[in-house]
Picture (cartoon, helix red, strand yellow):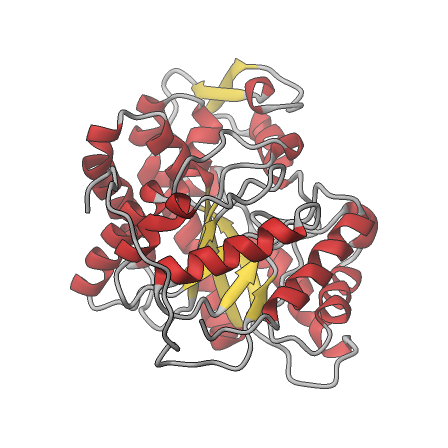
Length: 365
């Protein structure tokens, strides 16, 4: 697949062979703090707002500031010393670190300690009000590349320390999996992938996508193949602002195709992938060419289309239709472009209402 797609395509006019009656919705994770003071409140919010619509997982990511709090906590790690201070009001105002002279970083120094969070959430699930079986609990995890880059703020030290961050995440994954098995699904969140591709000249995208895919596959294959994953691509949402505005979906498709090839070669299934089709602050594109790369996505990659924008309902519907035409098979799941944690409670509820409406949009073309 070329990193520039020139060919025009014709809208699909046939019924998809693997017809489904209704799409599912996916909750990326976070909620406004006012709507999620406890795990019980957060998970019940998702259940209540999903109604009778199918949804993939049940998260309880209560704190949209988790990365900020984690970065601040690194001041207590003896192996690190501040490189730059910041109040985390935006991407250019985040604290970063360097290795202290003569010190070595260990996985436990940078662990997210998600086992503790999951234990609380899993003990809460039996008390939720629901009329049916609960979907798996969603354990949201940042990619090792993202964590390392957030910590060091520069490519060279981030890449050098990457195995340490990967080991820290894998330790959490293995302990959670051993305790709860199929009751959990892991969502691997990585705004770094699309951001690094965006900041790289397009002629180099294929090579960079291979390297990024290798890093992702190494993390996934460090755990058993029966673990369920979702890959969550993102444009960033700190202070409810994206890192950049996309012009097409070529970067996401190149990366996901490369991940699929590596995982298939290793005998691992390809996770469902959340592709953001907008940023959360701007309307989904209504230009067909924006979605053309979806036609090059490998056939066994199932996607979650991140296009639900409550401020642009008409554009969200057009985006769904255009994306499904180019994908040329049903888009089974839709979502917002990112978590709802930086919206108001009313906006988060409006986003979910629109998701439910779009989920019922006819799938036949």
